[in-house]
Image (cartoon, rainbow, N blue to C red; front, side, top):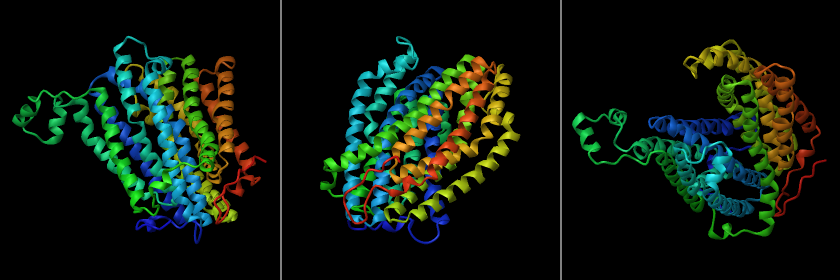
Length: 494
């Protein structure tokens, strides 16, 4: 495989100091995740101009779309692992074939999911609580089906991001994400609202006469469906650029048409590594859904408090998730290079950084819990929601360090190719250890929503203890590729 002109953007992860390349690799991932949040906020803001019904419609839709995305996204992890370990092992000629076949496999899978999702959208939406025959339901079906038509374009970017991450370049995907966010922010309001919202004219700096001329065109946008079209268009442009960069070798990895032809060996490896990763990722969304249903037993205020609390938590752990993805690549490349000691050091460095950052963050949140919840809620029921939400942040927030360290260890397991271990600990920590104690404290202990918060906090501590103790055994350090060979091995759970 020839090194393209963009190869110098890849971080050197197998030689020299570890902290700087770990930061250089991880920070763009964190920023990319923040841009993804901005992406979603832009959609929510402009759809909100249509009213509460429209916002409810996309909320129901995203419960389905996100689950499908997590099911397929696990296979992009396989691309990261195989590219990282083959690069570390010096098998540069193997990287193009692995990358091309990963793209072909995931796109094919996304097309299948796209067709199934389009056909089954009404039934899936009914399962998550949307009432057939209502306006919300009809809007949800339209939005969901439009999104499913564009799922292959969405995954085009995800695959590119994962492959480049394995190569050691997280800056290029960041630039593409930034382009996508800018495009989405620009076209979102026009595709959703057309020329019927005064805020658009004010933002564009138009005079009253110019605004009247635009309004006279009669284009009123596509409503909720416009948000889906904007997402697909911006992601699609990014995906096309990404494939162009890979085909021309401008990002170090240089693909040829022959690289997209699947081989039985590589597809088996992608499934073996990717399927457990998919289950692990979908477990998180299922766990949140199950906990929401459990919290609902404590009342509407508790559900609102939990919703706000989980949003705060998702923002707080973004640095840990970025370091986890960075650790994934560092571990993968160094195990490929037969440098397990360096992989160990990378994990410990990530754990130390994560613990320090989240300990400080937890202290700030504990002291300002009520004020933080208050930012997200107003109205007559605000006082009750703030009180319950503040309890959530004080109890669960005290264990953010453990949650962050757990994510880092999971990243190390994935980077080594031990995705089955990551899956098992994901199910154990996010389902088994959380739901029974939370239910027991809520229903039998009579603690109300506070019991659920203690159940989540307890699980955060126990799951990292169990995962960490097993991690110390070191059975994950074998890797899945041999240096200068094309075959892969199956890491066993020992």
